[in-house]
View 1 (cartoon, rainbow, N blue to C red):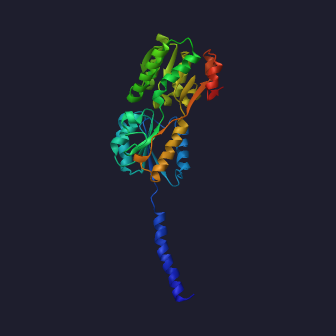
View 2 (view 1 turned 180 degrees about the vertical axis):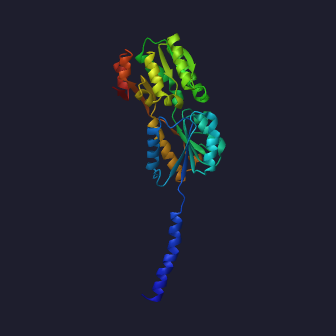
View 3 (view 1 turned 30 degrees about the vertical axis):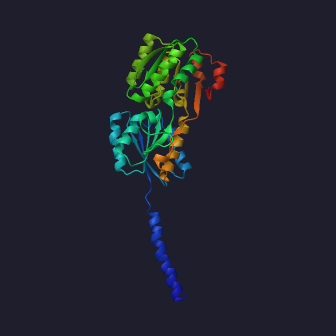
Length: 328
């Protein structure tokens, strides 16, 4: 090899090596995941979230890292957990499990992108300026679960046509969600001629107390408000409803799968996949201010026919025809 050619090869290697090294040293992006409750009941949801990330080219443990922070239903812990993620310099914060998580993240940073999963109107809550152009460092997915209570009452009445008195269980610590649910339920109840009995429950013991009150007041049916805490306590709710022979409807599909009579709400699995897609888009450079808030378009009616038989209920064929899933 001639001397000039040899120097050219060596020179090329010297130039190429630092570029390659810099590429290999590029930091792995970190996603902060902030939730008001606990990991219980989130296995499928997190799998869907990671699938959404994968759909955009990110695989947990390979080219992205997820830092989880669970408040375990202790709302006062959320500000510090959000601050931890900001100090960790995560690239994006994903919030779910209620509005408290969204506002904790929003208060912790005005620069780190935040992707939320909200049950209520994010514009009405003040999270974003508009659905089309959020305008700040937040965007996400709106599930509309707080606005579905009237439809839940319709399905409940179709299955229990003689129902007049309906107990409604809400979590007062999730104030915005509880407020929306009550407003919607009360309006629907007036139109349908139903009497509403409101019960608050934010702990396992308070759920027990609510059902003890059912034993005294004997409502004809129950509507369990949409709330992450109630999803976490889905087995307890299903067992108590069965013990007291109370037909009940829930928001989350997991409640019906755990033995609850029926559920109607947004497809939560699809919502978490979209949450992952949005987080991936932000990592690729999309700006929350210009990324429209996605809205739920798919709602599932799930009926547990085994529970219906245990309660002595006959499911009308018209209701079966509307069901997206019938659990035998």
